[in-house]
Length: 503
Ligand SMILES: Cc1cc2nc3c(=O)[nH]c(=O)nc-3n(C[C@H](O)[C@H](O)[C@H](O)COP(=O)(O)OP(=O)(O)OC[C@H]3O[C@@H](n4cnc5c(N)ncnc54)[C@H](O)[C@@H]3O)c2cc1C
Ligand code: FES
Image 1 (cartoon, protein in one colour):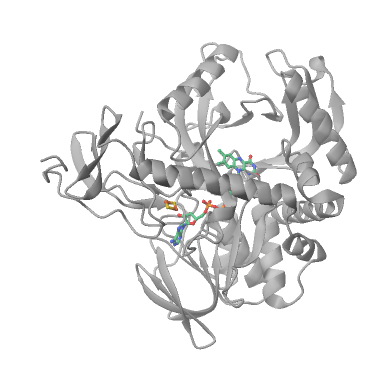
Image 2 (cartoon, protein in one colour):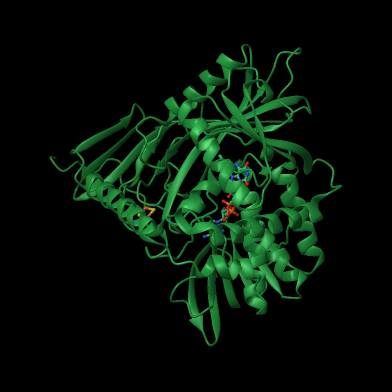
């Protein structure tokens, strides 16, 4: 179960990048997922000097784990935004997303394997789901997106559904091949892209910044944080972001069964998404994602993956799983993406986050928004989204989000003396310190259980065999290496033989 590998990463060649970190640049971008590479390209297209600094390898995290649907049919997103922010903001969201989609299309059309035209379908199997579909259809109409209403027979899935909405002529991406095309274009415009280069800190330096990375320092006029949840944030932004993680898997089907042609997403209480793709040997496969959970707050993540698997096998008997993976994305309390200055940074640090699992359009929209802000000709839709001040509903959401975070902070520290996190892992108080200990493939590791972001106590993720923080979603390998989330520092090693508090 530990050999998780995204289908996209497994089926794309390594993206060529640059070997050396330059000493200075106009804009440094932390993060080489879609948001970072798109922001780099949008800025380079306007003549800016750009360096992208990626901690691991391009697309390693959420972009490499995405379902890759490039569409304006986004589950219940439009009705949620209408409820939170009203129809003017909703129209701005729609315009930005359409601009993002068109920008992606313009760059990717005709590039082998990167993009394929497909209808998008949202469907419901329950009464609650049907109600959500009706609300979404109304919100889409208010935003000027025309969808087709489908009855039970028109959805085209091999199981019973109650109703659906179809938006024709959308696209499905191979997210890594798409990222490779955008990266090559960025480098042709003299953008520099460096991997294995984690940003650890940024300090004011004259009118700009000195950005410290694992591969040395770089001076930049501006820094864009395109790291999923913004790193270097001490709570101001992360307190307004919730994080949702989800499993995905690719299945081979029996010869007589074809994967669905359209891209599907359910709006039922357990959302699931289906699409077709090419497998490890180029064969047609079904990709399914679903069963989301909050990072670091799930007792048994392996059970979530098993539930997804069981659902697929019930719908497609004799489906054979060839690979699985998981990824997470962030939602703001207003449900609107954030593509703007980091509060308090005097315009020197910008961030792109809060894509709420619709980053294929939203990351590109954020890139256009940030490039416009840097150049002083921000699109109107971007200014409208940026200026939106949340209402009571958003404030209530922020309060409940932070109450949950506080609950997990206190709960983690007050945990029983020894908390068994599963057969392979424990969190213990030892010699005054909280210690997370695991045994993975026979290797025993003991590390501090205290998240290096803001002090949450990590929990074991049984499916992925990682330590995950319940506060803002930072994740760490068994040996303490930071994997993702707002943390930039690893969990410190601890002596596994230290006596526990009672010793
Ligand atoms: C299961 C799932 C399915 C999805 N399906 C869809 C879909 O069908 N359609 C859609 O539109 N959206 C979808 N999304 C959302 C979309 O994939 C994301 O919104 C998008 O990929 C986010 O891109 P990003 O660049 O912000 O983040 P990422 O791809 O996570 O990129 C951030 C990068 O920053 C790097 N990084 C982190 N810290 C540092 C540091 N300190 N220094 C340097 N680099 C750092 C990371 O290694 C990573 O590569 C899905 C999301 C999930 C979780
Ligand atoms: S305390 Fe913020 S992610 Fe752990």
